[in-house]
Image (cartoon, helix red, strand yellow):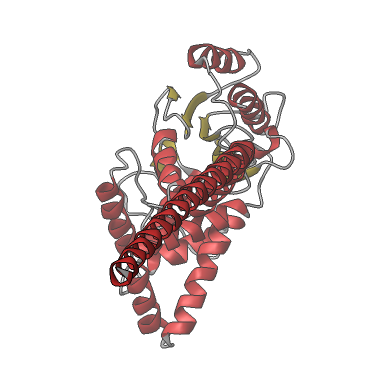
Length: 353
């Protein structure tokens, strides 16, 4: 009997242990569920908080990134040297018919003589206007095309200079770059004459002219040609006998546009050419009609009967190219052609900015 009793007690004890184990497991499971619920709630609260913070900071962050991107694009393109334009500026709406009419009204004044040509290209929209697409004596505007040709054939010019002057390449390159600089910035005629000669291995001006003309044709400047030296200068007059140096506002504008977009010969060459134009010493025409603080890269040309200017204007809101040529004009009197170009420049800037 006692043996049976002991067996029952051991069985009851085992059953109590099983019940206690099950209770502990149940309690543990319940606690785990509670802990998981707490963790989930905390995680959700943190996530909601982060979203709230992001919603508060996002507009400012986007603005900062947009501004930084805009600065990078302007720096890399170079297209806005000296410009204060930003991507947030609204596009300027321009009535080109009205602008053209007002330019022609300026040129119709009785005090203004001669023939005039005006080319305008909005570099932000590619819209343009052209008044009287006429080829005229280029004067010093021809130096723009010689500058481009010098960079295209720079290695040949260096080799020719070394051969003609019996010097080394570094000295030759330094001299050639100096001649390009003085030809553009100070419009020195003798620099132009010498650079044209250096296109020829023999130093012949007429041979150099023909090589430059071939390059001009290859570039697609359909109404531009170079045939003679420029004066006053130290050189004697030379000509190929095939005509006069001539160009159009459109050809000049196309060359300046290539410089603006850094596609004129190469990016490095374009940068150098632009830097020379930005240092232009003669600023009494197109730049004189532009507000202070606005960068203008230009090249002028004038004789007793011609007055020209071709420029890239880095406007406050709009970058553009403006080229004005005139022939048979009064360059000194009441109808001073330089002042007319200045007036046209001021009008165009007002319309585009």
